[in-house]
Image (cartoon, rainbow, N blue to C red; front, side, top):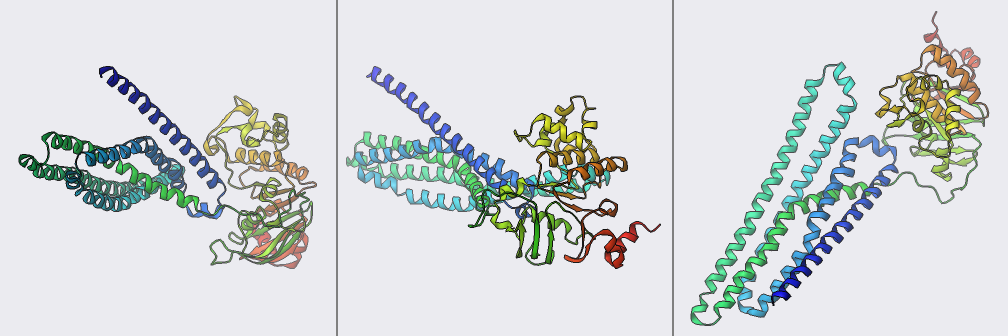
Length: 515
């Protein structure tokens, strides 16, 4: 019997090890797959979604909320099945000993179920609030750390601290409410256990009358303790389960967000780009309420250079966003080479449209990876060639590690002009059919701008180029200039033609060249 007991203990150890390992392994695989799926989904969400959702909130979904699910798999599910099987086993053993005494014990089960349901309802609401407040904290941190330069320049440290203190206090209050709910539930389970034990001992008075054996009563007391042990374990992990459920709600809420733009049924794949662009009576609004573009129509021939000018908010940047199909228009149509932009695969469209924006974003890495964006088809020789072309090689070569020099997040260690030059090199490395320059020379000094203008003259040959600029000196030689005002096209023509019209363009010209 001793040998048999030893073998059972060894077997139990082995199977318990396999259970914990296999369930933990499976849990890690599930979390890995879910995190990949969630991030892939986020990558394909439309820009309109990111305009309304802070970065910190999305980071919370992919990190903190996913980590809560990870804890569910590693801490709860591993022991959940064991506790469930143990409960059923004990119930069967109780019934086999005495169905009558078992019914006395089972009277407390409805109370356990009711207490658990009440706790689940209250805890879920409490955990939701905690997750919501944590997302607000992350959003605040992300925004304030990104804007630390502005905070310190304008001496706003104290005010920002007070704002964070308030947000953090709200998170603390939500956490205390969550703690209060759990603090009531665990003692409630203990109270139900002692109530069941009291019932069993009271009914055990029947031992004196000889209706049940003393050994059976003793066995029931032992089984009762074992019966409530897995219930207590489950109640200990109930807070993890509720936290995971609240996190899963928020994760699936994000997954339920509609993906980015979908290709139409008439999609043409593959699509050979030439570079002709046409807007036909395009109406667009970011919020479906206030029109940013109203009945805009124009045509850009293949290889032309067209400039958009106008006051801030006139719709210039919106037009270039629509060409890359970053947003869907409400009315009208946009054609590329005579084909509706909705019938062109988004992948092919964006591979052939490159932008150099006023605010350049650089990724953490090195100079080389920021130019080719880890595209293996762009060789080191190509990277250096385009860098020389836009005069970026001059400052890169002076760095200690040259093209292998590290770039901090956002390119904080580079000047605005240097970041702009890297953006030019990045755009040219992909050899686009359509090149968009949105205030691309605004952060470059006069001497560098001359070099850039020379490079641009070479680059735009055989390539459709769209220029958005406030400095009219950079667009005087454009094939066509479109003047925007309050979302509408007011004037269109070459530089000399527009000056003769004595209209909006003439007024803008006079403002810059009064002398």
